[in-house]
Image 1 (spheres, helix red, strand yellow):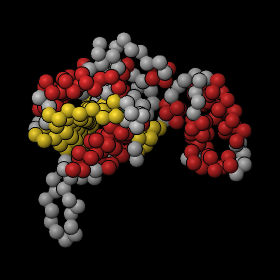
Image 2 (image 1 turned 90 degrees about the horizontal axis):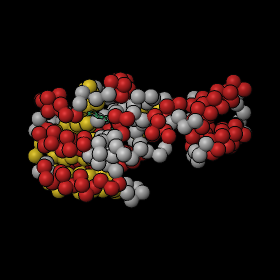
Image 3 (image 1 turned 90 degrees about the vertical axis):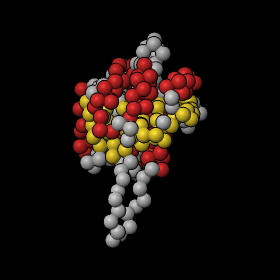
Length: 295
Ligand SMILES: C[S@@+](CC[C@H](N)C(=O)[O-])C[C@H]1O[C@@H](n2cnc3c(N)ncnc32)[C@H](O)[C@@H]1O
């Protein structure tokens, strides 16, 4: 098995892919084993069948042609959950896991206390909205990690919505409501929630239209609708700011993911629209990645 891993890695490195994780995850996918188990089996000197060898090398050559790993395995890990993904939907990114934390913290801060056994408690459910939900990653992570929360999610692309639908069915626990539609129509789509939302989060398309991503996995496989946000990348963020003012309750939070150089412009547009306490936050690599504000 170690020699197969080395063979895959050589193929991937020749294609400019450095990750040893990719080799282990591809082999794990073929064998139906976790990455950790693949490492353990390799360390113990296990062998694989000729058939599995052939299967994994076929996947490795697809990966070498820069098909995203997650399209080959059909899965993407996001915080504590595993989403189904593939062509037509944006693959959730690790940096968004950090952005989601702001929404989780804000939701937990407004969550009711755990009910005490034997006592009737009138449960107030905190309400979250995830605009531009893609695979449903953020919406589902919120529902998964804040058990009292009710989450609404909107996605415009029919293909992405179909992936999100599958993920919501499997992982939503009946607490995530997925809607097909445009963020610009959110006031209408979410009419019962106007002025009641505790946390509004979005990882919208924010790449400026002239800045085509360098990585083939992104450029050639993430849907264009998921990437580009107009000339300065902020088209959708402007819409979300205005729609959000009508959705979010006074004192509620807005959380936006964005590109490294967009923090100042986003704070300015949010403040001009009437949001308070706009603040930009860095990710683990110290890049500006998220801006939060209060209604
Ligand atoms: C960058 S992706 C993020 C997906 C997901 N939230 C995540 O973090 O993995 C942006 C998503 O916004 C969707 N989208 C783009 N324009 C939209 C619009 N006007 N209304 C609703 N969704 C939109 C895209 O189809 C895509 O799924």
